Length: 290
Image (cartoon, rainbow, N blue to C red; front, side):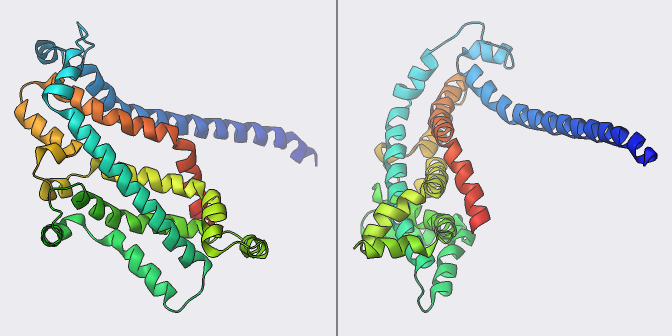
């Protein structure tokens, strides 16, 4: 007993030192990870305010003179404003359609029992494994036959199709965790199937919906392959394609290119920061409950 009493404080002190060392190492690794990932963004934004000469002489230092005209050049001269509007319109339209249709599909897959349910779920989710580039030629022929090539619909339909698998996967996993008593009480109060979905299931699925919205929006915002193949009209081009053309036209004007990239990056960062809590909660709860 005396031996144990004498050694326990030593063990506690040793365990405390181990915990502090482990915590220090974890925080050091996280800080290093943040620096490695944040520095390229900081470098891009910093160089967006430089002159061409300042960028050539001092690419890694702060601007000797803060030049805001690079953003004007990127927005007006390079037509970034038009590309920006096209990306917002196509991206949001595809997100809304994907979430509504994916929500309905997830509701029936998670709350109803019917023959072929598992096969249907597997068929929908297997779309996660299909590479986009393998569908470019068939998609081009399909859009041409439908007569919607070179329109916003030519991008919205593929975006919805490729976003549905991840949307259904997230929402089905989340909705499956809800107790059946919720629907039974709603039915006793006179609610129909779609009223239960719209008024009860969707509000309860907000964290997973927020996760799906962010993933879909970022995928749509950064998508390049479909925009390159299906859109030839410059007035309908999205930001990734417009930036590629901008970089080709302004090969030597690196500060203007950095300004254009900064304009593209800001909405994504703001959107993610606003929805950060929901996306973390949705991914965590969906993983645990599913």
